Image (tube, rainbow, N blue to C red; front, side, top):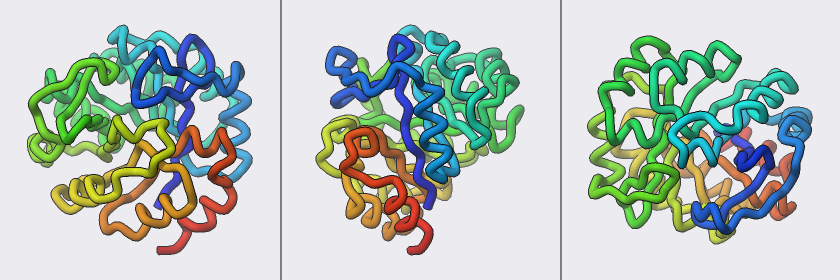
Length: 240
């Protein structure tokens, strides 16, 4: 299972939100490229980036910070936040992003997801962000009536590379991930599932590692706070 350290970008800084609330942001650094290098030098195989301002604006906002990260590290990067057109997808892939994450547009325009996955095989993932099992969009500010499983079913044959599943109420709260819901989604789909939200300890990672079908885990605040040692985490994920 792969550990994806999270670098969430707000106003050019590395931050973590509490339960997706932009007004509850903790700044962990003002040099995203330096943070990316730190994760890469620790042995991380991937980085997970989110343009938080872009998620609300509907278009890239922290492009300069993202590009500084791409220039600083050689490890693959997946990026979400404000990516809602084929042109934006193509732009980011041309700049060196290895995989884009489509969230809002997956709900509002699933045909675009299919088109993107066909145009860029292996380069398109979908972010399913849920509150009480219902998908939320537009930076988690708007809730829909669609369940996570229903949206995953709708996209089952779209050819997407992965699903990033986030339990919003666990995100940044250091209360542990929703292992049961993530594992249930993994059992319900053939698409690789990456867990996000609430990973706060080595035990959390091991619980996700031991759940069938979960291919990766994203962690942010725990790595910044030191609650999760990155070397121990990487070692634990090498074996099931």
